[in-house]
Length: 376
Image 1: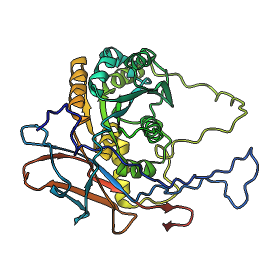
Image 2: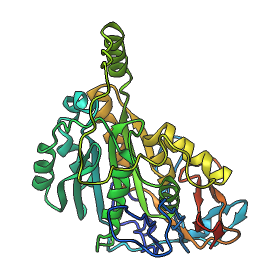
Image 3: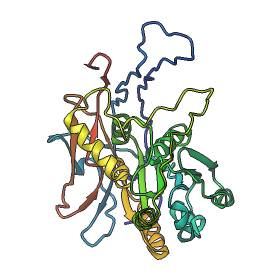
């Protein structure tokens, strides 16, 4: 049996390419040319569908040791209670890792920066000695590329040195992760793909369509590991200060500022109801994503979530990720049965009734066109 850090394990696989149909949602601009046959309101479409589901699956004994050497026929994967025909991707000659490190730089995040010292060294431990490439993003209201994909540790450290407070009130975590997923999808390498997210627990101001995010995370091969801090203490202090010195209300509203560009639409899921009724099962998942974005993003991808309050806690979280990011099986199967439902997943291993299995719990498939109510 090989050690947990060994890369030449034929059953630990590299992702195959997924094909997604992406249809754009259109919006007619009052300042732009007229578009025939379109309403002024934005039209939302459920546009993500896959004929292949990938399951990053980590298998451990009760004592926490990784179980190696499992074959496809040993995995019992049930999709809504129906056993599926499973394959395990095997590409032992391509054991690399493509990693995007996504770090929040807004709101109370700068107060945590001292705990992130040595992040470059810890990322080196995560990628290990095997072939790899690392990109670095920071984000507030929008993602900022601090360093594009590089195989150089020095390039990654230089990118981390550019991490600065960005001063944004927003923390669009879901948008930043979605951006990172698309960065990984464009890579030409056949490496396995992962995202390391360092953020608050909740999202503040993302504009992504959450039904598409849920569908994307449920079937692709990118594993998200989130390490979250809680801004509750800072928010409590700010609230206490505001109660002592409340801001004075202006005697009259300030004049509106002229703008040459149309106003930016509000986040579609923060303050306003969606323009169509989400199916009840999907709504449950979306509400979970609203309440605890960092944890739910990891769960939907088949990854893991950690939290920290001290530098030691942060370092220990990344050490755990380093021990797990390479050691999983990548299962795949072609889904069957009805679409437009939330598919519940259960994974077991024959011969290991007490195994501890880490994988995604569900996925969503189908195409929902809100303009017609059709399912495609």
